[in-house]
Length: 191
Image 1 (spheres, rainbow, N blue to C red):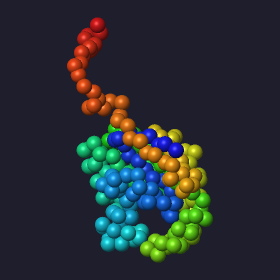
Image 2 (image 1 turned 60 degrees about the vertical axis):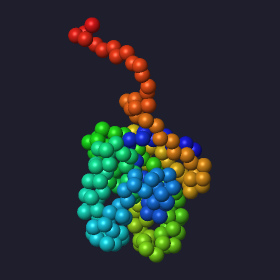
Image 3 (image 1 turned 30 degrees about the horizontal axis):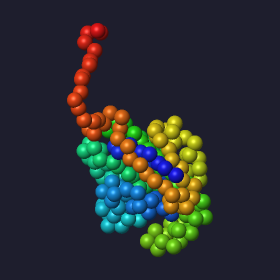
Image 4 (image 1 turned 60 degrees about the horizontal axis):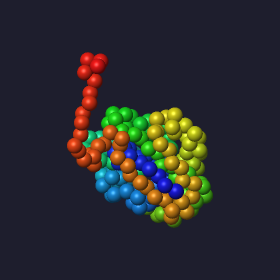
């Protein structure tokens, strides 16, 4: 499988807790490109699992995302992003910065996410949380492009990681690699 993304864009990882979003992010993106909700929860509260710090964590996450995008840097948002409200913030960020919003969905079986959650002592969420994430994800899948994501890529199993390739391409307007000489022809007063 091959995923093509613009070099300058906002990539939202979408999936239930335990689906492997952080593992995916670490494998395919630079650590500086990945903005993790868990990391920012820890930044503001010293506890990545502190759900009461979520609002403050996302305030800081989106502040950093805006700064990166304004410097022409890719942003990968590592959060569940299964709720419409969370995705709306991603879309709004992309619109504000005039870049594409890309969704990479890890649509893995709920049972796998539950197993991974149990195996992670640092993040042992009650089973109903992951069930709710999985249900919200299933309900959201068909709406992602209508919601404003330019490209939606869905992975159905962890095995797809093994053959996955992510290719970055410049935006069509990025001509930095073009070499001259150039003739510039413009429209002067309708002529």
